[in-house]
Image (cartoon, rainbow, N blue to C red):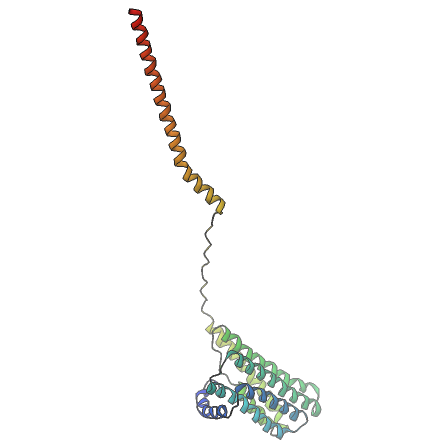
Length: 260
């Protein structure tokens, strides 16, 4: 919801803060790394039952995640590597915090209730995966009832009191599952158009160089052979005509001698 509907308003307010942090020499990767450290501290605070301290650390983690993008834009260092680093650390931070919640529930409640944070983590991972896969296919899959910002806010409300935590986790599970289902339906409808398949042209066969050379040599030598054969035929015809003429002359000469 925040990422889709209110993203523009959030960027307008966090942009000047990001520019100020960039002038102080703070980089986006530094904010991403320190946000992972604060997420680890949040998980430890929840696991030992310090829920009010966990709220403060969770706010710090959210601020790091909120400001690393504006700092990267202000410094002009937005890159694929930075986006990959930020996405991976977000997934690790979610796993750490919900793992701390599971530890706390195992220490206080026990039973199958320990599986509830892992169910929330599975639904959260599905929502993130749907967006990543859809964007890799060229389809936008943002928005929904329970994105990361909403999950952080709702989890902070659950840390206000131990009696709030379990109902908040059930609410997170239900809304995150609805978000995953809504994204699936949206991407399914947008992907209904068939993708045109490019026709593959078969490469033209090329004759071996030896065959081409022999054929060219035969084609080149064919006129010369025909010319030689033609000249031979002409020569043989002229030879026969000369011999016939010579025979006739000899016959006439012998006939003349006889008359004499």
